[in-house]
Amino acid sequence: MARKHLDPSSSPRALLGAELRVARERAGLTQAELGEPLFVSGSFIGQLEAGTRRMHLDIARRIDEILDTGGFFVRNCGAAAKSKYPDHFAEAAEAEALATDIREYAPLIIPGLLQTERYARAVFRAYQPTATEEDIDELVANRLERAALLKDPTTPLLWCVLDEAVLRRTGDHKAVLAENLRHIAALIRSHRIIVQVLPFSAGVHAGLLGSLKLMTFKDAPPLAYVQGMGTGQLFDDPATVAQHTRTYDLLTATALSPRESLALIESVAEDYEHDQHA
Image 1: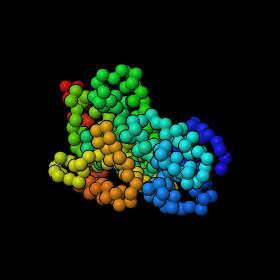
Image 2: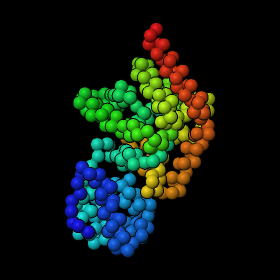
Image 3: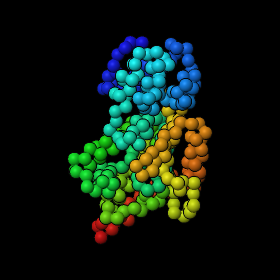
Image 4: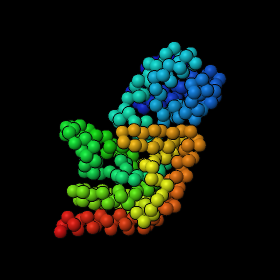
């Protein structure tokens, strides 16, 4: 293996993953065999190699020892770990950019990939009421950059279930929410995304414990991400991912159909626009 430093400008995580695959195969190890002394699954190794998971320093150090790579992964994992996102969300955001399918349940706010500039700004200002305008501008820019992946006409497939509370949480921002709902409706009508609304009438349902994001990839095992206030956890264990997938399936079964959901979204947006004009 060439003892080089990875170029941070050329997808460092993907490059690091490719080097890991070369080193592992050269050592004659399967993904599961490399994962065993690291106390991680073979799936986790596969996600490192595919660039969908971040390589942390302690893992890099052990990989260098096991594969006898002369400190290569320790030297380069720093570049691959740099992120513009909070630590609890960084891995999920970076995996999201590589996913072929994203399925998300949002119980409280519009998902980041579907947020407009004004809606994102209102959300960040609510989270951080004393932040400077420069800091808010940076957060909004990063969020809109994430949403840019929807400019591709087909990939990734994005399927969202929105709790009706997402549509009703307006406060002093009816015009802002109406604008964002119109944006979502436009994406639905252009056949770019699938959206279902989980109505209040559904009562007790499978998603009461919080938000959920499921991601699948072309060359790596699927991931599930759950998030709380300032916290988040990414799961690759097949049984855990399967459990969260069942939860999502139950939510789609309980939610309104895509057609009924679009009608509700546009109706609510129209109500807010009428209130503003009135």
